[in-house]
Image (cartoon, rainbow, N blue to C red; front, side, top):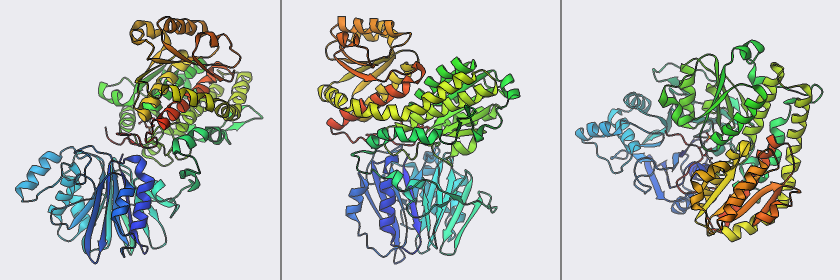
Length: 609
Ligand code: F6R
């Protein structure tokens, strides 16, 4: 949520800031701005709108080598130039970019107004820079420390002052990473903004503050105690964060699913013993499993849908009861977890505020925690007791696609790993599952190629629909929910997902000729039941789009459109149906001319509660 970037070094700063903002735009994109030092003056340029509009307002050749920048996802105050960052104090001495929320900003604002400090915007962030200004007596870091000691809330901030070549960086609750080059420093809310310049990074933890100047950098805690931090090396490449000829990141990421599955499996499967090797799960031994009473899975949005699918496979293969909860609800209901509960958190970004808060709540209650996380080094990845990285690579499209697929692959690896430890999954079954998982990349590749034309036809016919219903059963009911979520978030068409049998308990009232119903109807135990649901829709004049198993000719008689997926083990069909859901949403949105990679009101990483 919001992207921040800063630079101090020898190069011209504006191209670096603009480039960084373009890479960060997926985190928030309703307004943006930069502040830089020019002849000892603090210059700030902002715009309501996208980074390219900001670029138009700037002379990129300006001789400045230090600055900070921000792309915003509005929380306090509408998207507008005045509400966009960087915010400066009313005398233009100090400039700040802020990611997070200052909860007590109203009382701080009232206090500062009594000290004749005035404000122009409706934002909480401007209050923070006002507070820093209030404490500023020539030592910027000291002023920042005093200000943040008064703040209730979360922040990742970069602060720049007039007349001095230094940037102060502080973190509490919102991610900040420091990139170290040769006599130059890059600071950003995530590594995608700096990866083309350096691979050497330091992740700031909550409660840490850094001062960066031409002599170097040093990091302390909020009590000014020096902290020695290790430098990590990034493994992500620039290629991974570029579009490579695809019209949108989302389409690229849908196609990439075949590759990222291979990455997730690589080195984790021993084909000789048909076993799974997961270095990050050391504590899961037989004694631990004997005591384990239940598993609670916490996540939000698409990751929550993955959690719902996971419940089916964990309960089926490991016979451990699983509860799935929205991370945002979990922490507010005094949840019943203890040391005999394993809490699994699933998060692509590893920074989702609701999921992080739920994780911390679980840890407070002594639960063991396991993270299924995509972004290496993210806060959740660092705070869980153990974890599995999903290895989906950077996901830039705001709508999550390949991350879901690899979350589910990771969950399968977890199930196989635990199954082999407690002897619940036989070696034959393990072999079968491993073989099936390994065949998915090829199947998905074929599926995309074979279905694209039919999906485009469906998109053309339904792009003007106002509503959609998505229905599936069993392990595919969460995929119906995901299909509806994908469609609404990028096409703005209203869509609902339901377990198919629930249709008759209410949603059936909506069925008419203008309501396309997407049915997931793979050949499995529930097949006949779903067919009955389809017939109920047809009987009411509804339009049926079926995602069916290859070879099922009967389905043609009761469907208006059919997309076939490979006939594979039912437990793995979510992978195949999911891809079709993503393609339907993508092509409808593309025909409608929507901003697919940056849908309105959304942001990639939701770091506010
Ligand atoms: C939907 C989407 C969101 C995220 C949710 C959780 O396409 O991307 O629903 O899944 O915000 O994000 P993570 O997985 O980063 O915790």
